[in-house]
Length: 304
Image (cartoon, rainbow, N blue to C red; front, side, top):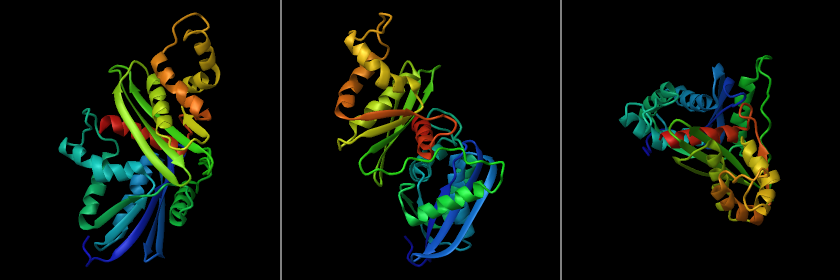
């Protein structure tokens, strides 16, 4: 880091409800822990990730001179994209690893150009974890998004941190024509967040929902109650309604047919015995921010 440049810290955030829909972003500027300025804005038709990127971009653009910057975001999409994925995208002419156009290219290109005049240390902070300035930029983004009466706040609130419960947010993608899918999970415990993901071949989206659940539960270090958020009713109903009957019938359905995805369910069984797991289904349209982020990360995992 160039020590001759002035130092500044930026917190950035983008609002995420509905996704896509009306969005907001916010930035806080700090010097030696002292608040210098706050800025925010909105877009009538956007996505969560575009707002996260816009917040970082507008914050950097606000600085007329070059700076040594610590930029703190709660978006793993932004941090991973600008510190890792972007180099492959640029080498491939802004195509992903599977030759698909990079989403939000206009903002990524603008951000890549903007950071040339600064020295930026990109840092991640867990959202909604009682970090004062992260909470402030979140409030700025939500306020910017909510200034119009046509923009009701329809997203369910994210679950509050619980010292005695682990939360898993799961997202998957699946391309039936290529039988190619990917999954990502965000493991949340107290003020800690861990990202895991993978990609591979499979015969159905259900397999990747199961893979995500197995991976998330396998990664746990503490034997605490778990809430697993998913968009899969198949996973929820299997865990809470069907699984006991399948095992009693020797892995057959009530119609006498072989249970689909038996190998994956069998991997899940000992984990469900070890942990008290509550599987909850979240709407694909109006899910929590971290659910939406898991979905986007799964997509980027497959394309990076």
